Image (tube, rainbow, N blue to C red; front, side):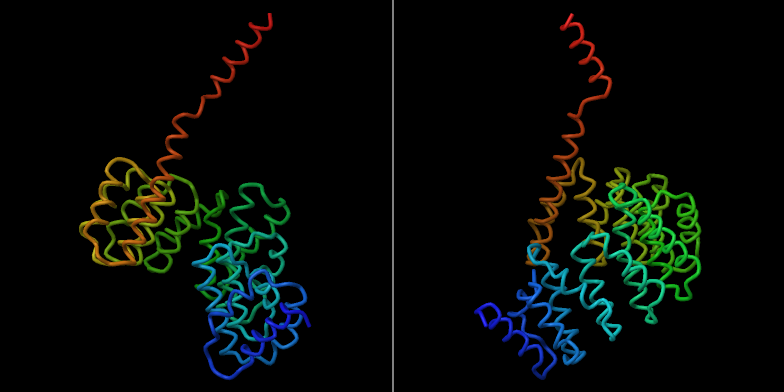
Length: 333
């Protein structure tokens, strides 16, 4: 047994030990796991208690959120068929958090969406498929694969018994340019139900379609916190310049911390006049370490946004290219 295998055996022994919490110091060992280590792990996985499995997966999810260099894809794939529904749901969530875009995942997700007996698993599968709708619209996966994903999500959005799964399917379809989806979003937004309005706004934010501008702007003033937050996030994703002033006002008046954070980040996505000044002023007067870190990240993102805007301004017009080609032809003559 080599040193690496021996070390991993210690990790396995800890996983099988009694107690609920899995030691965080061992979490990195599940990143980029080797085929041999994965086989050894799967050989003992059925002996691991459910609460221990969930403790491990919660730790991996937390680590994946803070460390962009780790990858738990291979491990997460191997437990998508775990007999315990909470484990299956966490495995999908882990793959989704790492934005795993391997088309080979599509059949597994579609199977879980259509057939899994657990509503949480079906909802997670519907949510994870949003990435493949986006890739399909960008023509980065095959038309056949995209067609299967799109059809399955539409079927779930229309016919699934559980509203939560239908809403996740609608949110994932937000990336789609299909007229059917546009009508679906409009219908969901007009519902009195708050959950459906939130899902509709989420889909709007993913659409890259400014047809939703008026609805998003109106929702920024909604009395319901969840609707306001969804509208704020959508305004940022859509880069709505018209939302800049309402969002800047939120920095002074918004009482909900989650909505406030969403407003800060959306302003960093929209950019423009006064945004940097307002964010820096907010940074100067806060003493909360977490908020300071978040504002610094937002200012970095704002700088990136402004750089993109400057790049767009400098980009040439296609007509300029035609003029250049004519100049080249004249020069040849």
